[in-house]
Length: 289
Image (cartoon, rainbow, N blue to C red):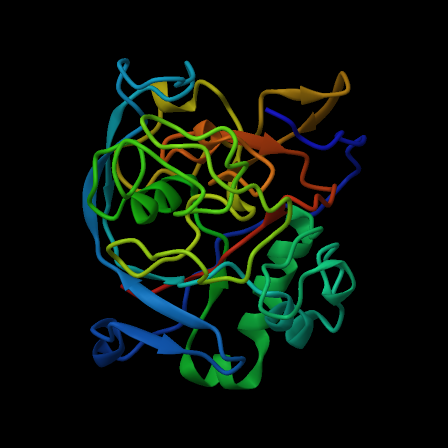
């Protein structure tokens, strides 16, 4: 599997989980909403699932140990990966490689935004007057929330079954999974929503761009992680360039990757200070207790 060369990590700001202000009980029951910048979010119910992959799953990795997880609170998640247009509205810039100059545009996912900038976007979005008035607080999803939302109640390799072709997601279609046939390889991002949504209404959970999660990366975290609402280890354990620098989790695979990297259970990591044209993100909006 190919990835862009990773550059040395620099000091960056750590993300914090911010408690949401009080919501009205009526808002807890809203199925979906569109926020002040036109971003669509859908309600993800609380529930439990088996995180990771079974030992029989083809091309699985050793860091995917199956374990029970309970998501104790519902939350809202972006229907789409954050688009270039949405990012520019909040951040005032569009650093994406696949902008209009390179076959993309405002409806394509933002990429070349590092983890720190993705966290900053969530903070700025939360600070918009209309969002503060509505009591909305945005952040990156935890790794557990991401996989729970991706699976949407399924236990198969992908949200659509045990095979994946590039007719169903944007990845290197010359390397499908399972019994799927080889298909197109577009070699760039696609407009969000081009491919079918999962059962909970989320698009591009497989492919298009990798998505930043809030968690530090620890390949053995699943062995000791709490059962309820795991938020990742206190710090990363895999060093970069032999320095005390660490990775953050990414999920979902990208337009560059083989289908195996788009599996619901697949875990990968990137350096949080570096931008990549294969990495973007989507947001979570918290619901008050």
